[in-house]
Image (cartoon, rainbow, N blue to C red; front, side):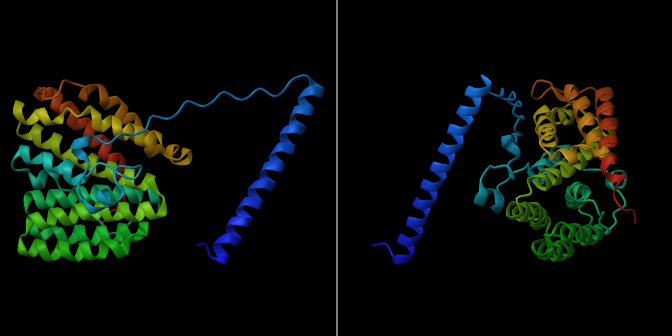
Length: 304
């Protein structure tokens, strides 16, 4: 049985719909009369072509709680942990060659904050991969500052504390989970804020750092087998589509244009049969391009 409130609301809705129908009918009649007077109606503008939707490569869709809760949607981005898991095949990484100075000062530009947060998560996975306990404190503090700047500080606070505690314990598997949860929790906040752009940019920042690290690691200790994991044109295609779906004002930012052009130039080099080995000169070419792409972001981040 419906309550008085439900019935009252229902009557109002029906009445509103009837009034809207009458109004629309009157408008349609007026438009038809106007066409009859002029002998023609205005031509409709041609529809704009639909943008290509970015599709996350299946092996990079993480299994963190945000992906379980919301499923594969516009806010679901490649898991940075999944990207870094692929570095296991590279063996020991030369940390001193791959590390970079980390500042806990966040930029004021929201787009750069998102890209920089992704880079920081990538730095965290590098620290875990190389088991550098003393470096995790700097990463954790910086992650918290960046997350606060995006409005997700409350979600990330628990992870930054856990990163420090588990790095002291040497619990590297838990550290991997905490870093993955950091990305997932920021995504959850962006879902609530309906800000898909930030979620995609965080993932892009993480991939840029991961690709810079992997190409340099393979170039430093080359083998055909290690080079086979570099040919992932599908990931580049995903991020190109993501950049092209950003708000037009964001796409006009010079560094976003540089990232788009750099990814577009790299795509043909990575578009190879699955499992194909790269030669050492090819790896060094990729390394140079990956470094330049990563610097597009890093040069805009605050220094220590």
